[in-house]
Image 1 (cartoon, rainbow, N blue to C red):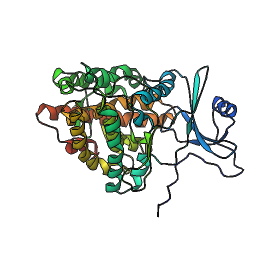
Image 2 (image 1 turned 30 degrees about the horizontal axis):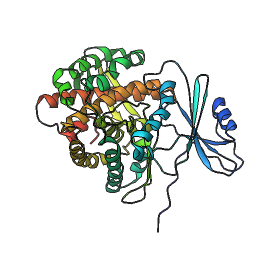
Image 3 (image 1 turned 180 degrees about the vertical axis):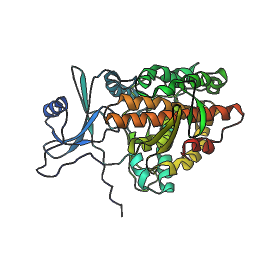
Image 4 (image 1 turned 90 degrees about the vertical axis):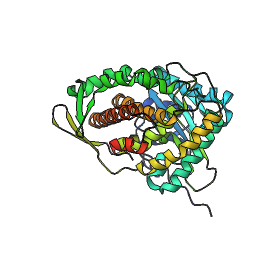
Length: 406
């Protein structure tokens, strides 16, 4: 007998006679033009976009996702990128139809002065992040494997675009100076000295660390990386909705792509998955306990128990087969693990600015998340650069344990 699906979490799904949660007027107008009634506001994952559950006269449920323009957002989080997500899905329908079929399609788009809204089918499946917090480790890792495999086979492996000559710098590192302005505006001033002490360890601050990470010996680790199709671009586990019931080939849906049609680095997306397991999901759910006993000194710890770190070793164990498949497809032969960990550390540092840019949470919560990720990112990048100086492949488990992530 097939087990019933668990409910998909909503911020509110009102019962009979309960008024729907407040939605922006433009979103409500878009729903009205489509003949749809708002039911409740859904969790948008921390971004500025608003997701509402809506239904038609027959009771069929849909999701209406809305974003309005605003100043002060970092790159990749504005209205232009939001509108480009539909273009990416159309592009994938032409070049990778099996991947495009995994996406919840845009059924209708509404655009107005300074806002856009997309109508999507409602998926009954929880996100991989939601499933991972309650599933046993072995079952969850099997589910991750069942998602990664088809995406590699149908999307990443068939790519084979010429490598970007400055891939590490242009795709990963350059996010840091681009987003520095919002960090300098909000984070403590002592984080802009040359060094800072985090959990008893003296590490370079972001600007000297950026220079060290940009050294030719580090950039050379990405030499020869061939790029893939833009399968997603922000593949954190909150953007994958999957049937959690045990199955050899579970159904899953992709949502919220980056909004790009450029060739893309598969390592970027795999590192986003790893980041969800190590730090991102915990950051968004519980945040951090941060103390500064003296200027330039910080202690950092998760504010609550981790929901997903239990799966980090299993996820890392899946990757050798992924690397073999990518090499067989002509995408290069590594060093894949070093690239993955460098991408992961850069994601942690870059995401700090995003937590300040996206204003769905109260200011104190946004600052806590940004500060925790920033300090954790300094620890990770410094530790990894030191390990790479030692030669040979880095010990991933020991490295990720720098922030208690493995």
